[in-house]
Image (cartoon, rainbow, N blue to C red; front, side, top):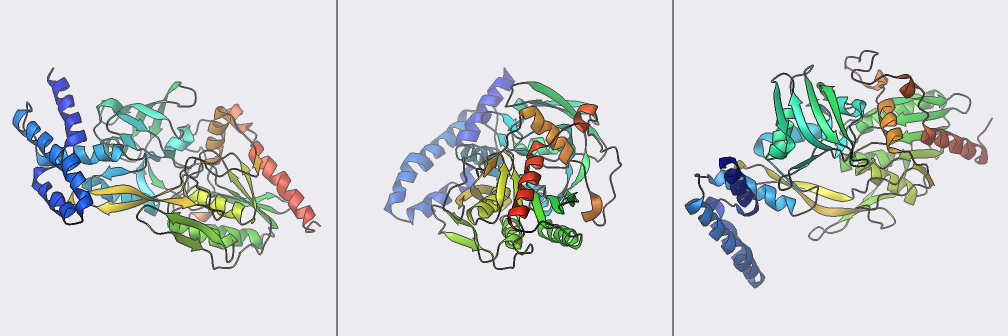
Length: 444
């Protein structure tokens, strides 16, 4: 009975809680900004103050302002969009690590809905333990079993995404078991995953994929600070090998830094608009390329699928709208919004807020629509899982200073079925690129 009362109280805190210690400040601030803000006082701040007083005076246990503040932040963010969230102070360092391309754990991005108690995989990061096992975007995590501590956690009992991150991240070499429900099929599946130090290469695989036609292939798993440097190095090496056309693979690429997407676009387009952003309080900003095209107009194919998101969609949209290359695969994920991290007062953490939307050079919003390919080649859910495992096979030539992985691929399930997987999207890209080489008069 006590647990039920506590949970009810927590929900009240999540929805209504604002610490009394900072309550009057926002009211005064809003009062100073014009008559229109009287509505906020009457409809939000005063009712909220009344709710906090009720909790103070009548809740079964004593609560602190910090408890209600955390609940308020999580609750308010859950009423916005799925990408806005509250970042507690103790997770800010982990959040910053994610943008540098190196951190510890399983390799999944996991937003958490504190009201519905749903822990969902936003994106598994290519090449990481979870990705190799077959954990997919949109999978719902229901249970976590941590082997080193012999503890079982149900997602429904967690209070924030920080709780989940704390449990999932642990010492390298230890194991954790997660139970997920695949959104596409509704089936439940368990994965036992060994934690690793997650170092995401800017380029995962690069080489000449067709020696006869000198077709280059590069797999880019994400956009972070090292992506542009690693990609430039890979392209130069392929050009030195006689590359005449290039396939860039952004399948399962969850995105990352906008600046990285702009830099990568600048490698393949000169004097071109890449993307524009605009929000309710954010004036339109247009991002353009100025650097020369490193391929000097050699034919380019970009591979994407329904798991390609954010920065990878920006790149694909720019290539498509500027007629720089052909897009092959599936319509992309449809994450076309800009998130900005704003620190809170009193070292209480930060809010990650959606502040603007992305628009392709043609003025098309990416949000919920994604980027449609020129040539659609669809894979089944099972084929996508097998493709994800295949793409996790690493090429260490562009990972200077790192220890090479053992040849067994870590946790990768090995089977004759996996080895026989036929990547029809890549096969189609090669065939199309051959046609472009012929029509461009560049065949031998």
